[in-house]
Image 1 (cartoon, helix red, strand yellow):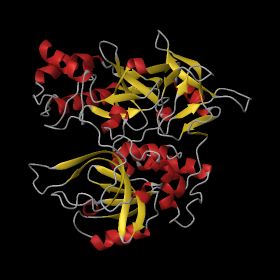
Image 2: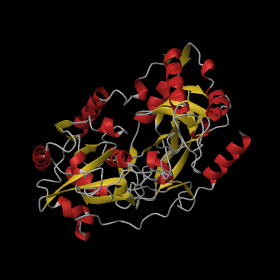
Image 3: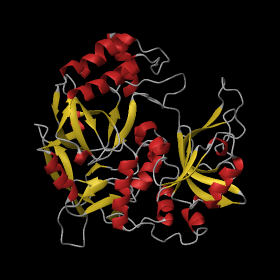
Amino acid sequence: MLAFLFIFSMAYAEEELPPLPKGPMILTSATPAMQSPEYWIKRIPGAEKPIKTMDQMKHFNEEIKHMVPENIDVLKLDKTRPGKAVIDQLQLEYDTLKNRKLFDENDKVVPQSFFEEKVKPLMQIDQVPSKIKVKWGVATQATSVRAVPTMVKMIEGKGDVEFDQLQYTLIKLWTPVAIYHKSSDEKWFYIQAPYIRGWVKAKDIVIFEGRDELKTRLKSGSFLVVTGESVRVFRDATLKDVFQRPSMGTVIPMATSKSSEGAYPVWIPYRKESGAVGLTKCYISRKSDVTKGFPVYSQANVIRQAFKLLGARYGWGGQYNGRDCSGFTHDVFLSMGVDLPRDSKQQAMVGTQLGYFEPFRDDAQRKATLRASRPGITLLKMPHHEMIYLGTVNDQFYVIHSTWAERTGDDPVADEKNRINQVVVSDLELNGRSYIGSLFDRILSINEVD
């Protein structure tokens, strides 16, 4: 077992992934001109028109919380929680993983003894009290949410090296969390975040005195929104000492500043020795891709945000500083002030439902629905995939999406593919000559985020 763990930890620390394809890649019938957001914006009548006012956006976000039960408002959770609910969830997650056939990066089966001897003692499920006194905190930086308290990587099968089945997602700097439980070594917290529940490293979470103190901090004052792929936060006003690089959609409270010159002062949380929250003043250049408050929510601005990520790395669950399909759509809409859920199934429930479809059927209905859809704010849902609709050119439908590979063969066993591993523009005929069928054939639902 010790040898097994040593191999696991070394493989994770020194992981070498296949080289990334050079991007941005131009796929199917897409052209170089289509790699610009303005190409698509100028084709949309009234593209700059606001879709919602700030007050309407607040109401819309409340609607999303009611439509999607998994999208939890952490600041409205009760201060105590029945222990049984947490125990049942922990046990379910543990049993599900332990009973799956998972592999390490050398294609060797992960033994059940690893879960029984290493994972379960860390989870200390039997130590969850009957009544949990919830603690409240925020993330001090982007951090992984895991199925169980370990960074050991596990994959489903040969070649799936980038798809860690223990990785749920990445939560951003300043994401509020409710803390329900901790690991036996106190290095992990079991938390509820706005759209996900799981294990995070305790060192990346700071604890407030209570829910009300956290709410006051998050709701008061002005803030900056990261509207670029990421921005640099500096420790010093001279902008020489880089502290961290929060990603698109991160909301950062501003520190008081009456000056309209110099860098933006912002508050960044840090963890005191006790685990309690501390705040330090940091700085962001005024030349950075950030806005005070959210940008105007319009078709044009959503498309501009999406194209800022063109060529950005694909990353399952936010790993490798990348975005998977729903991570891409989440960040784009989050940067516009839309509290879009993280999971693609949940995202497909938001806004106005335009149509549901059977795979490889309903072609005429799909086409009619797409032609009536508003580019930029329309999401197309497939099995395990999510895309943003861009519009029609020469009777071809185009999308921008973060995708890992294009299937090219008709043999499901060989599963021939070309790695894409980035955000791309493509038409819906992508994968059309493979055994799985085109993107168009497999669209399950279409919804406008309005």
